[in-house]
Length: 322
Image 1 (spheres, rainbow, N blue to C red):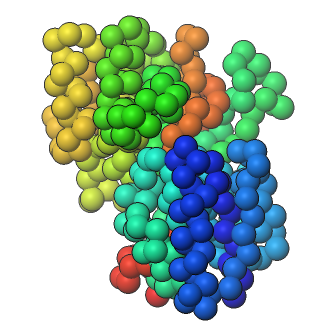
Image 2: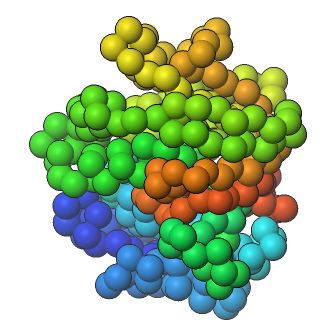
C-alpha cells in the first residue's frame, strides 16, 4: 500500500520541517514505507494531491496547517462533488490552528498523528462544496471556481479576521488569544452589511450582518465554536448569523461564540440548519473565507459534496470501517 506525505515545511513559522522529520522517523521505525513531496508554493499542495489521486495512491497525507489540509483535501474531488479516487486522507498537523484535527479527533502529537496514518482506523466525513467567484466584480463563467471545505465557510468579516490573525500576531499571543485580539479590533471598526440569503428555509435579506458562518463541525476558527445539535443529520449545515453588533451586545455575543454551547436565538446571534445556502450582496464586503484562509467572493452557493471523504483517524469505532 502506497503512502504519500504532502509536506508544507513553512507552516508554523518554519517549525513544520523539524516536526515533519520526527513524523518520518516514527514511520520509518514502524516499517512504514512512504514517499514525500514538499510544497514550494501554496497551491502545490493541491496539484500534488490531484496527481496522487489520479495515480491511485492509497494514503495521501497532508503535513502542515489548516491551509495545507484544505488544499490537499480539494485534490480528492472533481467539480461535480464526486471523489476522483478511492484514496484515503490523513493529517499530520504541524501548523498553528488545529481546527480540522479537533473536529475529527485526530491526535495533535506528532508521533501519535503518524501512528494514526498507519493504523487503518478510518471514518467517512461530510465535505462542503462551494461555488464562488475568484475575483470581485466579474460575472463571467470563467471567474467561477468550485472549492471544498471540511469545517466552516464564513461570509463577512471572516476573511479580514483570517488575514489579521495570520499576520503574525498568533506567533506571539498563541492561536486562540491572537485570534480573539484580532477579532476585537475588527469589531471596533467593522460596519455590518446587507445580504440576500436563500436556503431551504426560504429567502431572507438580513441587514447589518457582521458574519454568516455556514459549517459542518463545531469549530469555526481558532477557538470560535458553535454548538451543533447532534440530532441534526450530517448532510445539513448549521448557519450562524451575527448582526447588529454594538457596545451593548458585543460582550454577550463573544461569550457565546467562544463557549460553543446552546444559546437562544436573538436579533444579534441566530442559528439555523439548512442543506444548502446561496448568498449574495451588493456591498464591497463580499469576501468568503473557509478553513482558515480567504478564498474568493460572492455570490456563492454552498452544498454538500455528493460523496464523503475517507479519513484516517487512528481511533477505532469512529463511524467507519476499521
